[in-house]
Length: 181
Image (cartoon, rainbow, N blue to C red; front, side, top):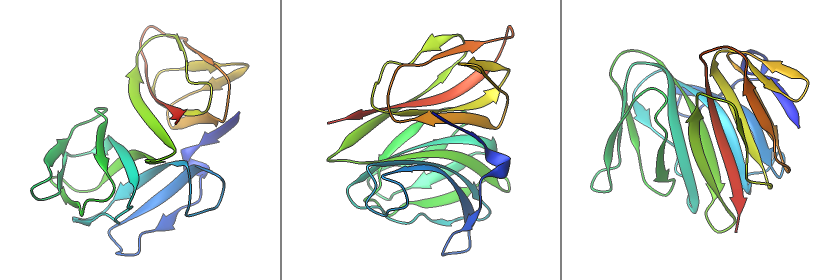
C-alpha cells in the first residue's frame, strides 16, 4: 500500500496548455502501455482531451464549476461534483468550462486488461477487489490500517482487501476498485 498527499504529487503540464495533471499511480509504473492509472487534473480552460485509444476513462469533478464534456454524436454530459462519469478514451472529447478552473479525479484502464468501478462512500466499508484500487478523501477523517487520511490524501494498492473507517459523523471518500479480466 502506498499513501499520497495530492499537494505533494509532481505536476505535469498538458501538451495543449489547457491544464495540468498530477499522476498518482500507474501500473506498470512509468509506461504509456499501462494497465491502469489514476491522476488528478486541473482544467484551466476549455479544450480537447487527449485521445486514448482502447482505454476506458472515469472522470469525477472534485472542485470548480460544472464542466460539459462534448463528444459530438457519441455523448454530451455535464460533470457535477462527486458524480463519476465513464466514457471511452477513443472519443474526441472537448471540455467546456462553465465557471473558471476545475479539478477532477481520473481513472484510466486498458479495455482489454481491466475495469474500474468508481464510487463515493460516506460510511465505513471494506474494499472487495483483490487486484488493486485507490481511495481519495473528499471530506472527513478516515482510518486505513494505522494511517489517518484527511482531505486531499489517499492511498493505492495492488492487492488485498482493505477497511476504511470513517472517524467522524460525516465524510466522503472517492474510491475505485480494479478488476482484471
